[in-house]
Image (cartoon, rainbow, N blue to C red; front, top):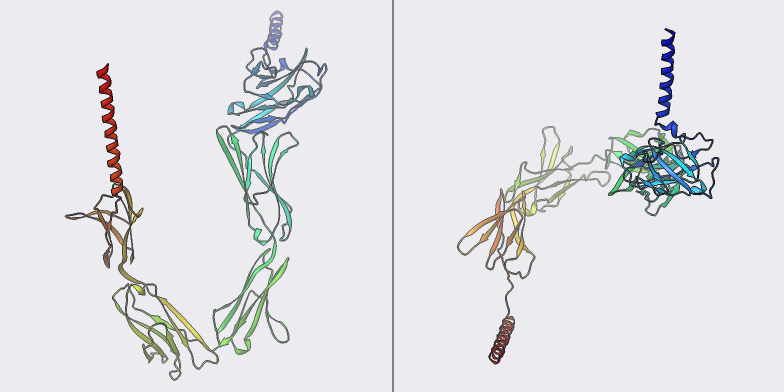
Length: 560
C-alpha cells in the first residue's frame, strides 16, 4: 500500500511539472518588471472610425535609447513567439495585421498608436512589448481594452451656472468625445452659427470637439430647447448623434393683462368681473387690484378675479399688479357704465342658399319701451320695411326687412346691422354681423395653354381649366374635330401632343349647372418664303457641284 501511495504522489508531481512546462498562456511570456506602461484602461471607439491609443512607458532596467527600439502589440494574449496569431503589430514593419501606425516616439518612451477603419473584430484586450537590443519588456499587468460600438454616444450640453435668471450672462458648451483626432465629429446646434469651435485633448489623452457660446438670457429663453448634433465621419459615410437640453430661466412677471367680462360696454346693474393674467417663473405669488382716484390708488381686491355689480360710482380706471420674487408688473383697464345695450339679431332663411333664390332678410332688436324703439341701420338698401311688434312676454321687437334675389356676388357678403338706444344716457351702439353662404353654378370658365405662343406641330403642351363655383366644379376636357366632339380627359390639367387644326375646350360643372370655355386653337410655326428660297438656292448649288464632279471624273477615266 505504501508503494502504491508513493507512486501516486510521483505521478501527480510529474503531471504538474508537465502542465507548467507546456502551458502556452500569458504567464510564460510576461516579464516581472517594476516599470509600467500607461494607457487608458478601457476605450470605446466607433465602428468605421479610428482610435488613437495614448501610451507611455517607464524606463526599465537595461533600456538604452541609443539602441534600436521596436514596439509590439499583441491582441487577446501576450504571446509574441514567431508566427503567433496574437502578435498583430511590430513597429519594425515585419507584422501589421490591422494597418496600425506608431504615432509616438519610442526613444522618448511614447508608444502612442493609431488603429484605422475599426471593425467589430478590433474589440479585445491588448498587450504591449518593447524590444530594445537584447533588453525586452512585456507589460502584462498594464493592459488596454478596446470596445467597438455601432452608434456614437450623444454629445453633452453643459450650461455653466445654476438658478438661471433673466439678464444673466452665461456660457453654454456642447462637446463630443472622439478617439480619432484626425477625423473629429462636426458639431452643429441651434444657437449662433459663429460659435467658438475647438478640438481639445483630455487628461487621459483622448480628444473632444467642443462648441461654446456666451449669451445673456431673458424670459424668452425659459423652456428653450438647445439641440446639438455630432456628425462622425466613418468609413463609407457619416453617423450622427443628437441631444437636447431645456433651459429653465426665472424672470419677473411679463405680459400682464387686465380684461373684463362680459366684454364690450358694461350695462348698469350687470355683474362685472375683472380678470388679471400674467406669465412668470416662478409663478405669480400675488394679484392685487387697485382703483384710481383723485386721492390715489385704492386697494379693492387681492384676488386674481375681482367681481362687482356695475353702478355709475364704479366707473373709472382699474389696474392689477402681479408680483413674484423677482419683481412686479401692472396693467390698466377703464370701465364705463352704460344703460343696457340692445343687441340686434340678423335672420336669414335656414338651409342651403342658391343663386336666383329670393330670400327675406331681417334685423331686429328687443326693447321694453315701445315709445322709444331702438334705431336700426344696416348696409342693405335704405328703402327697407321697418316695423315694431309686440312679443308674447309683453316686450316689443323693432325690425327692418328686405327681400333680395341672390346671385354669385352675394357669396361671402357680410350683412352688418347696428342698433342704438336713443334714450340712453350716452351713445350706446351694438352691432351684429352675418356672412352669406350662396351656392352658384360655374362662372368665368376659361382654358389656357402652357407654354403659350407659337408651337411646333407635334409638341407636348399642358392645358389648364379654371372656373369659380360653389360647390367647387368638376372639369372635363373635349377635343373638337372636323366631324365630331370627343371627350378626352377629366381634371384641371390635360397634357396633349398638339396637331395643326386641333381644338380643345373644357367644361366646368357642379350640381347647379355647367359652363364651357372658349376653344383653344394651336398656333403652329410655319416656313417663311425667304426660308423656302434659301433651301431652293442651296439645293441648286449642290446639284451643279455634283454634275461638275461627275463630268471631271468621267474625263479622267477616258484619258486613263
